[in-house]
Length: 140
Image 1 (cartoon, rainbow, N blue to C red):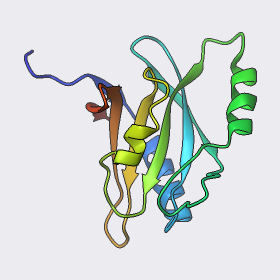
Image 2 (image 1 turned 90 degrees about the vertical axis):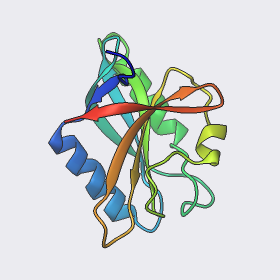
Image 3 (image 1 turned 45 degrees about the vertical axis):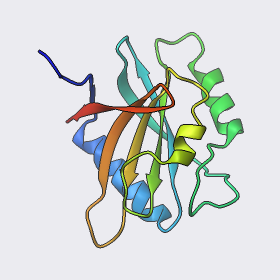
Image 4 (image 1 turned 180 degrees about the vertical axis):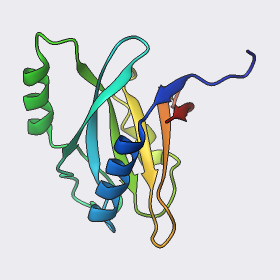
């Protein structure tokens, strides 16, 4: 199938959870780690994390202590950290230039939820590609 984008599944309960976290953090950015299995990866769990960025209205930074605790907990299991999620309180679900500058692990998937009440949140999926991102089909 020519032009088909790689796909990632996100169930309706997980999508609702991300929307809720984005709404609770608004007008700041929320963030979480995506846990999953397989290759291509499949999301099995979403782990909310504290955003420790200095300017949480414009940036996100996952608490490294939370990530380390999660990595330790996942040792010896089939699950692994497969990606990160964060919200954009400006309503854009497109990764920003600041997001592209934060690509330090090219194998991690990215989910971005754009939120700007009263509009409904919109979540999109991406993977690092070159100096930016390639959009993935988000099913579910």
